[in-house]
Image (cartoon, rainbow, N blue to C red; front, side, top):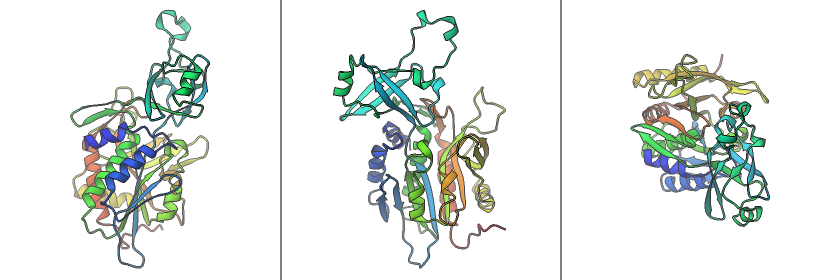
Length: 359
């Protein structure tokens, strides 16, 4: 799993530019699935099996491929780049951060410029600059140099690629949500020759970090009876977050009990209560620890897709992650292994006999 995750996190694939991950997962799943479709937005819709029944029970498990980052808004005559956020980049993490651009078949590394310490005024030392005041330095000597390199206004800019580990704990860029993609790939491998009581669709979605709605065409196409989103849960086991919740690396996969974001378009997910109880029962039987999570300010692909078609019973399952949206995040692959096992056992119980009705 570690090597597959290294491959996935090496891909530069900002929202709207997910093609490198699309190619990777399509190649990995070739010959393992009943059908692989890529819709016009880029969602990779994988039907793992076909049931010879008139109305098969359809289950969709999905995770987003895209990563957050920046886009070029202006190229200065001096060759420096001005930037805007694409997704929830934390501005407090930007000063001095190393960056990556892919253009004209080449990769360019640069940094977010930061004023030299020796000439920084006292009242500036603890100031976080907003994104519209920062600049990136990729070593271009002029605007023409940058243009000749294939860089222009609108070019996506990502965090530089990093990957290291300490046993099962992995540190890397874009673990949100390449770990979700890893989970789907591993699930496909393990279920390839399993007789499932449902038709299983695994979907790698686009533009989650941009507007959370890129997956909607895939949901409409699959029209699942049940859907499960895979994404991060904030680990609160670091010194700065202890006491705010009880989510820790190595404590097992997570189940979202409530998410809500109160700014802009209101969104979130309150999961189907019967589905939650069903998952908890399976976790107990399999001796899989399941961490319950409640967070404000978090949204996932489930937030709006649950409202499609006739309304879809959904739940957020995930894995604890430290330093979310920062240039380097951290996860424990033991949690991911247990998440995959939980999904395997759940899917063996999914058919028309599973009662998720309300009331």
